[in-house]
Length: 174
Image 1 (cartoon, rainbow, N blue to C red):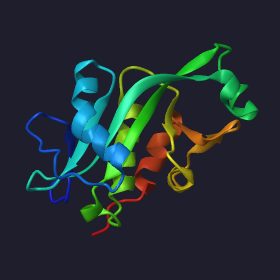
Image 2 (cartoon, rainbow, N blue to C red; image 1 turned 90 degrees about the horizontal axis):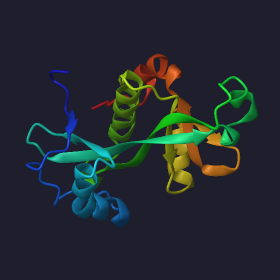
Image 3 (tube, one colour; image 1 turned 180 degrees about the horizontal axis):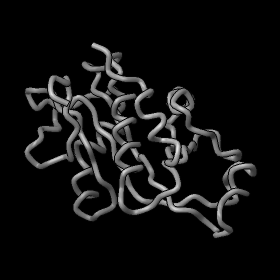
């Protein structure tokens, strides 16, 4: 990825989070005040997009979770083993600093998260997201995520489909 405008890396203590401003107080407040505690407690992992100057342009978090088989669309659930739930990875938060919006960074961070989840040595059936609003849900649907039938703001994407999609997810286009 040499020449790329951003490098995605795990959040480290040396990264300055204070100037980050996505325009969403819940996302910014979590990132500035809570995320390091969650990382220490092994509740979440946080990855940041860094500029060449080490400025944080965006971030996302990943954690383990499970999907109840009964929550999945019937056509998908019937193809899975009859366990009460299947393992999944939850993208808890995804945010882009306002200075970098409109550059495809959100899609690039989503692609990075999907690639990490699909490439992990610990198996997971899908990536889940809880969209904060209809606009966020639309973003995930645009990238192939499927809405859970009884929860329109909770979406998932089977990880088996990821490697065929990662190259098509909103690449950064300077």
